[in-house]
Image 1 (tube, each protein chain N blue to C red):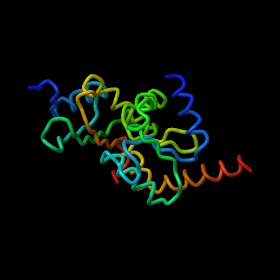
Image 2 (cartoon, rainbow over the protein chains, first blue to last red):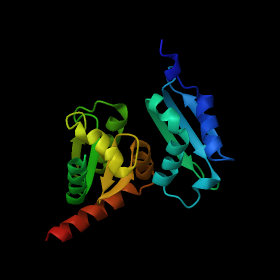
Image 3 (cartoon, rainbow over the protein chains, first blue to last red):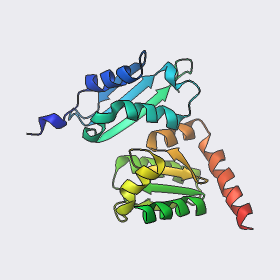
Image 4 (tube, chains in turn yellow, blue):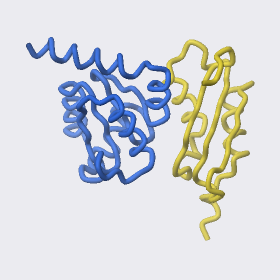
Length: 84
Length: 112
């Protein structure tokens, strides 16, 4: 069985917080199969950055995990902006 | 790969709106591609769709071109705008339509 391909939401959260210290991260496994995730990241490092740059920071943080993640839905914002 | 990169550069330069996607707008082969096409169709302007399943050389080339790891990818006015999540968010904020209309107007004035 290809157990090594399964990623847990906690691994995603840890990888992002490691790369973006202080970030608030919520990762949810949307199918329970360990390869489809919804991730929300609120990080001071995003301030002044466009959405493309914000998402690139998260993709960079996920680095080694990316190949095992089949689908990733991402929402990012700096702390002062309201979600919406 | 460099020929393919040149072709992508030409596509995004010559077309105000381009989407690199899995499948076609009528028959998208991935939920993210389908959702992104839905946004473009809601705006109601013509766009060029490139099916990377049919043109497989572009699948990795477009990722290298934009330095972005996932598909679909949308370009407006020659500039990389984002994938599904960003396109949907820009649309929700009301920012996507003016960006697209400006790119179409710019392309029309450049052509005249």
